[in-house]
Length: 236
Image 1 (spheres, one colour):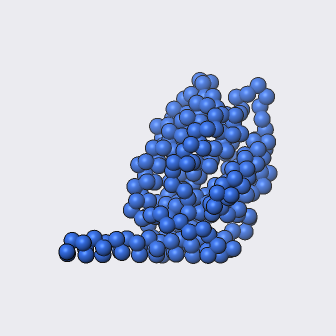
Image 2 (cartoon, one colour):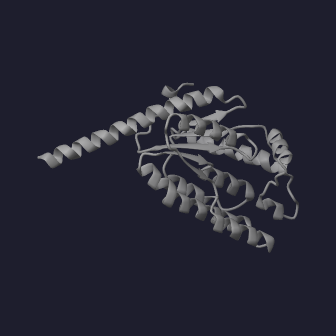
Image 3 (cartoon, rainbow, N blue to C red):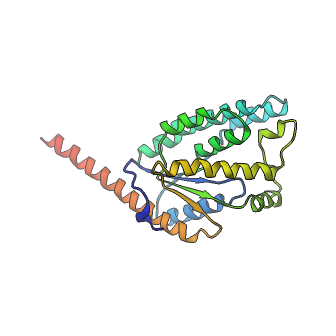
């Protein structure tokens, strides 16, 4: 694989999406890319999935009183996504910025699928929002991911724990990984740049860095060309 293998996207800005089940290693991947972009004097915008503090507080309160159903959780996560998309992502892309998404709407789609929530809203949004230039899916073994989560002393949150039979965290992660595979297999058929990342991601990130440089140069060229065209029209 090299950056010439990617299907070109001639829209404004650069949107790079990192996906994977919890503990997959995507955070380390984001850190590596950020380090590279900062050394190249880029000013990337990083957006974390479901990071809206007000909505996270509502989720916590509803969970505490036992009212956080799968569908309620789904609606709240989509509300958080729409807010971030409209007020952070979209303006940044319009300014030809490089945007790195620590999870995108594919997280919501797969979680809705596995949690037994309604899935139609996520797929509708998928048709309406900006398609990523490239998606990096960290396809790490669920057993490895669970071990990392436990060693960090974290708790895996999912609404299926509210059911009569509590699912094990490993089962949940395995089903989530399977859902990711189904979603990305479908999207690959629709000409999307989706890269499955194994444990050794050094080679992958070298190609991603090259792709970002190529796309950023194209965006700068279009911006300059548009500016020159406007100046010529004003001079007439």
